[in-house]
Image (cartoon, rainbow, N blue to C red):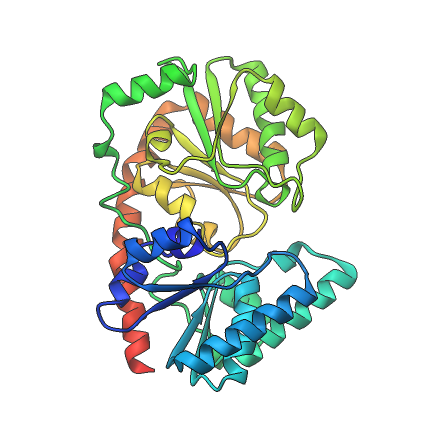
Length: 370
C-alpha cells in the first residue's frame, strides 16, 4: 500500500533516471502489481507494524543481505517500522546515502515505558540515517523539540508532503452528475442532504470517537445531513470506543462505505471533509479533498494546519474537542454561503502548492545533489 499507493507514480518517475528496487512486505499479487505499474524490480521482506523483536531482527538481516548484494547508492525509506529496520541494515551494509522520510510520529500518543522505548528507537533510526525528511514543517519543529536528531540532518522537500497530489486525477470535473446521483441513491443519500465525509482508518488516533459524538448531536437537530465514512476499522491496533461503534451502526444518517480503491466519487458527492486527527505527517486526504473542491475541518496539528488556512479553504479546531467539532460542522451545515466561498478556493491552493510533479522534481534535485 505504501509503495503502490502513498508513493504512486514517484517510483516510475525516478526509474527514468535511476535503477529502482522497491522493498516491502505483502509479497505476491499486490507487490507484483506495483512492479508492473511502476516499472521497477520488487523484493518482499516481511515487516510488522507492531513491536516484534525476533521478526524485526530477521527483517534487518534480510535487508542487510539485499543491500550487500545490490550495493545501492541510496536507500530511501518510508513508514516508521520500515524506516528503523532499513536504516539499521543500510548503515551496517555501508550504504553511503541513507534517507528516511517521516510522515507522522505515532509515538507522540504513547505514554510510559512504551513511549521511552519508541523514543529510543526513533533516535536510533535518525542516527543511522544520513538525512531525515519530515514531510511537513510542523513535523520538523517537533523533531527538533524532541531532540531526536540535529537540525542539520533535517530537510522538508518542496512545500511538504511525501508525494504530492495528482491534481489532474483528483479533479471534480471528471465526475459526471449522473454518476453522482447514482452513488447517492446507492448510499441512500437524498439529493438535498448536506454531506460530511471522512476518509481514512477508522481508529481512535484519527479522532473518530470525537467525530461520531459531534455528528450524533448534529444529526439529532438536523435530519438533512449525512456523514460518509470511507475506510476500515483496525480493532487490534487502535480500537474505537464501544459506544462509537454502536452509534455508527445505529445512526441511519451515518453511511459506512468501507474501503474504496477510488475515493473521488465519494468526495464528489460530499460538501465538506471532516478530519479530526490527533497526529499526522502531511495528510494526503486533506490534499485530495481540496483538489476535489472540498473545504476541510481539521485539527490544529502539523500538516493539517499547513494545508488549511482559517476561513480560506477550511477551518481549524483544537485536538480532541467534540464540542468545537460540532460547532464548525453546524456552521458549514447552516451557512451555505460560507461553505461555497471556501469551496471556490480549495482546489486552487492544492494545485499551486502541492501538485505531485513539484514534489518529484524537488526530490530529484535532492538526489542529484547527493
